[in-house]
Image 1 (spheres, helix red, strand yellow):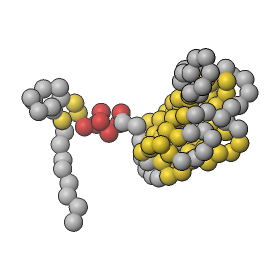
Image 2 (image 1 turned 90 degrees about the horizontal axis):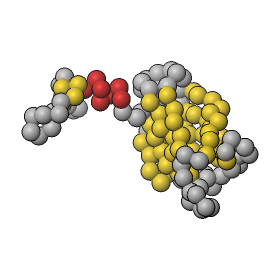
Image 3 (image 1 turned 60 degrees about the vertical axis):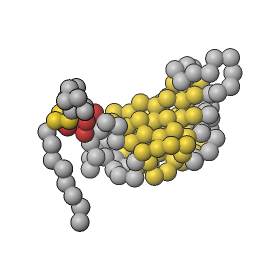
Image 4 (image 1 turned 60 degrees about the horizontal axis):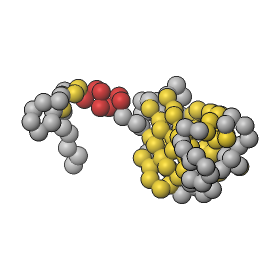
Length: 129
């Protein structure tokens, strides 16, 4: 039998630093992952069922639990570990499609040609169905 805990506010052990549970539920990522762009095995993830390599730098991530609609927020970090300046912020991402159960995007070097990355890390914020 499942149990249920109902609270309006969470506080730390000292009774300070309170936050409404609506902020916890509404502000938490509903899905995220970290995987190599040259493969589709997750290094770590939450609510992500699978990653798909659609071609050079072109990726899809399928969610375990769908979102209520396709109007959610997405941010994607991509990183090359090699080269003179490996960094997440020196790359750009073209978002291709949003769906309630997946996202598709293309990682590009400086907005130019698509490239595979050592790490690709999408984060999804929205409401679960």
